[in-house]
Image (cartoon, rainbow, N blue to C red; front, side):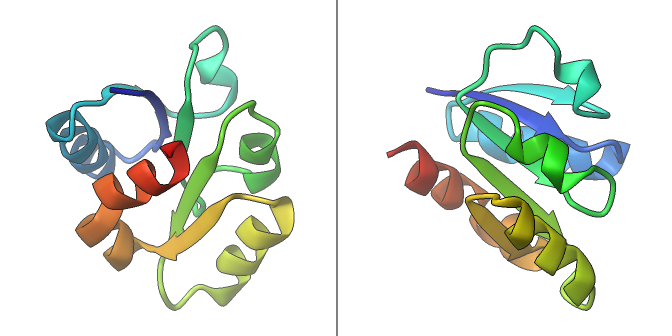
Length: 106
C-alpha cells in the first residue's frame, strides 16, 4: 500500500481516481491544487494536467503521473517538458491507473 496524492480538482474525476487507487490498496489524499497538498506525506502523485501546473507537480518529491485529454497535445507536451514520470491520455488512466501506479512504485 502506498500513499498517493491526487491533485484533481474535478469532483467526479477525483472520485474515480480515488476509487480506483483505493480498490488497489492505496491510501489516497485528494486535493484541488498543489499548494493544498502541503504537509501530506506521499509516495506517488497523480494529477489532471488540464487543471494544475505540471511544473508544480514535478517539483513534488515523488514520482508523478499526469493525465490529459487525448486531443490536447499542448498539455501533453507541457507535462513531458516539466519532467513528469508518466504522461498519459485520460482514457488510458481510466483503464490502467492501478497498473501505472504500481509501475512507478516498483
